[in-house]
View 1 (cartoon, rainbow, N blue to C red):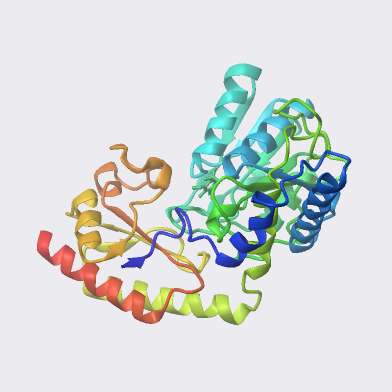
View 2 (cartoon, rainbow, N blue to C red):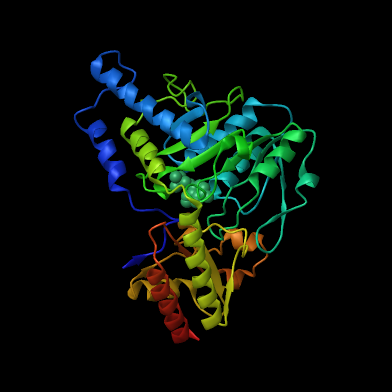
Length: 373
Ligand code: PLP
């Protein structure tokens, strides 16, 4: 079996689980307790926080542990918008993940916010960003990397432009971890969200970075843990796991460059052997680990099943939308015809994916498509 659905979720790294294990078993203290087991749990939590902060070039006080990407994003968007009532105007893109779209929808429905949806080109790149910004713009939220088509946005430039009109900037960096430079100073963001299960930590852990002195209204109320921003007894084991998984990520450009190389080779092979296939997303401003296509004339769901029979596991796009008959909102937002959007297939890799894996996947795709058309 060749698993090429790593943008949906990735295998847990054994080292992350090993590091977490004591905090699930013998070291069960509550980090808020003042006895020895509690103090040890607190020390492990704070070490994990310092490791995460170091990864993002942030301060420990700017790191909040959460239950995952969706919670981090809800907390960032709703929390920043409600705590900074400078205006009620938001800026975002229709290609964002449902966690962003639904948080914005909530602000519109319940708090009277108004949103400007950015214009996009056919590869999902943002057009005329400056035109969307207003003096009453409270918050801009844009993803670093699109999870379905892999297009990368120039977050540093966009955040700087947003700050010029006094708006705050949040980025959903869930798909960028391990692939893009995530130094929060270079990105110039006020908040950034990530999710552990996309890079080798277990499901159900995430991080929210919130810049010092930026006001955030908490969504979860209680004992005031996590710098008063996210109440609830912390999951020390998963904090340790996410910090460990971050440290295991390759840091050299060469390793990421190698994945880009085999991805490009894979894309070239697919386009050369399947005339009906078209690449979705930007050809160059593209995350190294995502190759996504639409293939005219095929049935997307049947194709996925055929590929699975051949031992290749992929998806049609977002795992959240799988099983849903609607075409992908991302593909519709970049102007792809709804029927064609139903034929989407996404291959997503890890740093461990090999050239041989992708050769087999390209051959299997060609055979499956040949069967249908
Ligand atoms: N944002 C993006 C871009 C994603 O790909 C995902 C996961 O699919 C999420 C947010 C949600 O993360 P989680 O599954 O941790 O809630």
